[in-house]
Structures are given as structure tokens and as C-alpha cells.
Image (cartoon, rainbow over all chains, first blue to last red; front, top):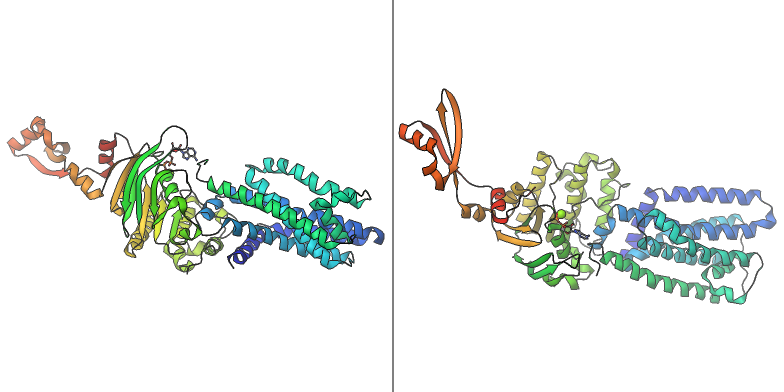
Length: 227
Length: 282
Ligand SMILES: Nc1ncnc2c1ncn2[C@@H]1O[C@H](COP(=O)(O)OP(=O)(O)O)[C@@H](O)[C@H]1O
Ligand SMILES: [Mg+2]
């Protein structure tokens, strides 16, 4: 219950801070590009767009949100309120996952995707992975610059393998990477979708565990005591 | 409501906060009075669970703060010494958001805004607020969920006298509702006026602890002030009660019957603070 209340509050805050305007702008732009390109390119392009925008944007939006909350001393108020760390994280992840999924579906529909169910699952799950990593890095970073630099290796690991897979290079082991599993689900090129979902769930579990630890530690140190 | 026993803490290896002992019963306003850097906010952070690496006992509402869980906070309201608000949300949206964190029945947002004179600015963004307006909003944010224990860190600092007055009255109203209040301040007037008891804190230690009234009376009325007319001009002077014999002017005036007025003056809490701790408050 509280998680849902917090999620809706987070959605309102993200809206007020103008994130959704940015999302709408990108979505319109992407849909426009898709519509003017040759039909034969549409599917692959849409897959890249969905993966890079609604899913991956979570990483940067999360950074922006958390750094804002840090600088406006919001975390201190949250630390002396009855919410749990897990509720805080769930609300953040769900709010961005929800909007990301909606945008992903719009892009997929405008590219006449025929696997909308796996698109919904894949974009939501990858959004969660990206958001959790965004949270981890943002809680560790003390400035926007530090955040941007620290996300580079994660961006590389999450985007390079899926893109090379998309362009033909195939190694069965690569699907163990969260991004590759996501891209295969998005593009509909799979024989066993459950395995791909399972792989993503595995990565979500791992990053969720790390996220809880990192956020807890930051909250514990808000008072300036390092133990 | 609050029991602190042999509490010690330091941010570094060097000792800082040591040997802190006090109890605050329900319904009392207890003041931490001390100069900047004395450790008042640190003590509040320990009592509110923001600093857990302390030694000794800090028991708030029956719970050792170190072992608190999230439900501990349903009954605690904290007003930090800095604003803790979403800049791009309005005052009302901020209160709604922070209120949504609690499971308890909330106080009416409009009456709270009204009480601190923010009703007409309720729908303005915080980024357009002045420092004083932010302080007032930060204060009612701590009252929102009607907590039994309030921790107020320099709530009146940066407020104009009229708004400070309003806030002090609200603090006294909370007391009449049976709330227990910890008030941090370096303003001795606020402390004298609001606190049932104060602890003088300097360099992480409590130097003395009593009601403002007893502290003032303990030192007694140690000075007298008198006035007289000299060459047609009204003049004023003063001397310590213990040293009236040495004051030649005074003795002459008494002998000649030319005193216009004479009265004793009580020391302020400020004077006493300086006397007890050897330090100034501001
Ligand atoms: N986060 C922190 N890390 C290290 N030292 C701190 C921290 N916060 C405060 N201090 C130091 O602890 C002392 C007490 O600070 P504080 O409790 O804020 O004082 P007060 O509220 O009485 O002005 C000061 O010397 C201050 O520099
Ligand atoms: Mg302070």
C-alpha cells in the first residue's frame, strides 16, 4: 500500500520536475523518425530506440532525481520518516518503469510490432535494471559530474553487447548479459522467452541486493557518522 | 519520554560528546542551549536516529534509538536546522508528499499553513520562498503527523519578531496538548520563555541543567541600578550588590538623599551562561 502511495507521489514529483515533458518530446521525435524511414528498417530501429530511451533513460533520470533529493536535503526527512528503504527503492523503480513501459509500447506500436507482450515485459524489466544501477551509482556519487562519469562503464556493458548482437554477431553465451536478453525479447528473436526473462530477473535480483545495501549505507551515514 | 544515560559520541577519533545524562518527562519542553558548534544538532541527530554510532543509552519513547525500526518515526516530528523541501513543488504539494509517508491521521494542511501565515503562498513553489518562509514551512512539516515528540533545531532562527512570536506560541500550544519537545537554540530569550528546563551545552558536554527560572534565581539579583540628577541631567549607574560599600557615588547619593530610583536587576540566562561556561552564546 505504502509503496503504491509513494510510487504515485514519485510520479507526481517527476512530472513536476519536467521529466515527462522530456519523455514526451523524445517519444514524439522517435515516432516521427520511425514514420519517415523505410519500412524494412523500422523494426530494428524501434528495438534500439526502445532499449536506449524508455529503458536506459531510467539510469539518467534516476541520477537526476537522487542528486536533487540529496541537494535539497530530502533524504534527511525520509530518514526520520516511517518509510522503509525497500519502499523507497520500489517506488522509484516502479515509477520510472511504468512511464518507460508506456513510452516503449507507443514506440513499438508505431513500428507495427507483433510481439507487444514481450516488448512490455522486456522494456519494464530492463527499465528496472537500469533504474537500480542508476540508484546505486547516484547514491555513491556526490555530484552530477561524478555520476555521469561513473555510469559510463555500466552504459558500455549494458548497451554494447546487445547492439552487436542486433547487427548479426551471435554467441550463445551473450544472452547471459541483461542487455542481450532484453534486446532479444524486444526484437522477438527468441525460441525460449522464459529463459530470457529469467536471466533478466536474475540481474534484477543481484542489482536490487546491491542497491539496498548502498542506499541503506547512505541513509545510515546521513548524520555524518561513518559507522 | 526521553532517557539519556552516559551518552558519548564523536565524529572523529578525538573525544567530543561525553557523559551526557538527562531525562525528559512527557509534556516538557527541554532546551539545548549553547553556542554554535557546541553539539546541539549532533545530540538531536543521535536522538532522532540519524547517528547510530553512539555509546551509552539514548531511549526515546521507550526505544533504544539504535534499535529503532521504521514505526518509531510515526510518533516523532523533526524540524531540521536547514530546509528539507522539494524546491519545485508548492508548499501544499510538499506537505501532501511528506504527509503521505505516515500511516497516521494527518493534521489539516490548510489550518497549519494558516497558523504560520503561509495560506496565501500555499500554492507557490518553494524556489520562490524566502528563507523565513521555508523555516516556517519546515516547522509545520514536523507537526503534520501530530507526533508525540518534537525535535526542533533552531526553529526561530532567521525569523522576524512577529513570525518568531507566532511560532513560539505554536510551540507552547503543542506543549499544552501534552507533546514532549526538544528545542535546540542559541537564543537565550527563546529558551527562557519556552523551556521548562535547559541544558547548557559547550564543547559536547552539559555544563548545567535546570529550569531557566531557578538558574536565574540561583545567581540571585546580583546587581543594582540607580538613577540621580546631576547638574540638571538625569544619570544612571549600577553596581554589584556585594560591592555597594565600594560605590562612592551611591554612598554619597544615599547620604545626601539625592537618589531618584534604585532597583535590583536579575541576570539574564545569557549572563548566567557566560558565568557558568565562560563562553558567549552568539
Ligand atoms: N557531519 C559531520 N562530520 C564531522 N564533524 C561534524 C559534522 N557535523 C558537525 N560536526 C562537528 O561537530 C561539532 C558540533 O556540531 P553541531 O552539533 O552541528 O553543533 P551545534 O548544532 O551546536 O551548532 C562541530 O565542531 C562540528 O564542526
Ligand atoms: Mg546546530
